[in-house]
Length: 282
Length: 324
Image 1 (spheres, helix red, strand yellow):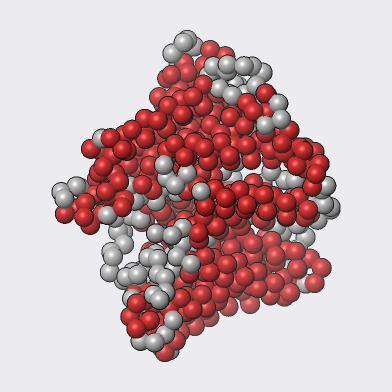
Image 2: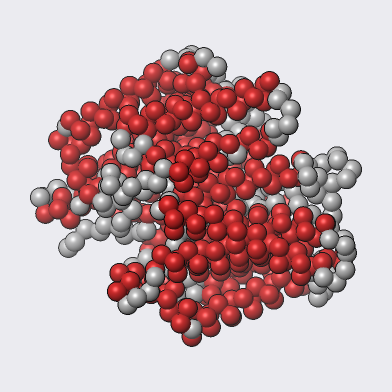
């Protein structure tokens, strides 16, 4: 596998993981990105088929943004993040599944989506690593976002509105997750298949934890995992006897679980208010 | 009461939108939904058959959430249970012990699958939300491997296991309807769980660990251990759900054995306010929805996967509507 192919395999995960990182640094644990990513996939396929891949990309970003804003508003009302996120996973799977199957009945196959050339999505993901790092560490807005992840009440006391900050961050993150979904359709496969994210949103969550909430380590872990996933396809291609294909599918998840078990993520480094419900005090 | 009204409103509203979106006649769709869920004795039985795995998973989720552990892994635990039940029933000589042995194996396998997450949480501090989700994905791949490999039918044609012998089937009181003993067992489990949570010291520890972990710790409750135990027991319940579905309804293992019951169990438990009794009512409501979706697909061309959307919306709306 060439480095270019590894990047193509890793790009969807990288977009999603960096999006999850932004949300988590603002204090929001978003399990729902698995569902949001699926929505991005289907939207990309639907828009790209008649309009071309660039419109597919734009539409996927818009749809991801919209879906994540819905999640953000639910969170803002005081909902538990884990529960609402799980709901979003089901909404994403059910919505894309139902729409896709009804369209299939009317002749939309989801195959033959026009694709993008190598480059924009892969290099864009790499550029995003730097951009997220710069935003979080080098800008005043990034400081406010991080503060929301550590102590939203203090942010409120300083005159800012942490709920609004979280909604804004999740809106941007949703667009990035949508792009990640689009990267799966418009680069890797050129088609839409039901449930095609196959747990990538969840892997993004694990990657944020493994990279301890820092963009560069997250990127390194993601590229390594992307290489492992690509290696798995490579093994299948070689027709390596004795290793059943179905077990190879479990490889990225088993690997992630093993790494989580071997490298216990210390509490230090994680945003203090991560996952905690915050509602505006009146 | 507000919870139930919200849930029914979401089901009706989202259901109507889906029906209109696929271009079906709403009245015909409604008639089909009613007919296939409560319209005849067999339809009612189908509702109870669909309720059964939902109730086992709902109880599993309710127990874990009450203890303050986010078990998102009922899906994987159910699959582990179904796989173990298949393997054991097919491996041991046929007899009256076949079904009980299958259920035992299923429960233990579910507990063991959850046990991985419990051990990782207790010893390594691994977040159970992540580990249980990853275990779900691994379990799906594991079932797929099993039915292509060691458990594949002797004929070797389809990716499915051999049918288990009739002696291992769970009792069906009114065949050909598909309601089976597993439903009654689930109701009994709900009753037991209610008593255990309300009346025993263990139940108090569970509730204290979930509601006020700091206070519980001060009172000498070893919260982490109680939660790990609750996670294992939760896996046992979900595993039993898988074993019961296998011996009661499908009688064989195949890919996509579960249409997402483990995840639906979260909706069921939340609607039931994490109370076992109310969870049984919620499971019946969603069981009716699942039975109705079968009829909706046949008559009105509504894809059954739309029920996932509706369940997801119910979770989101209930989460948003919750006031503490």
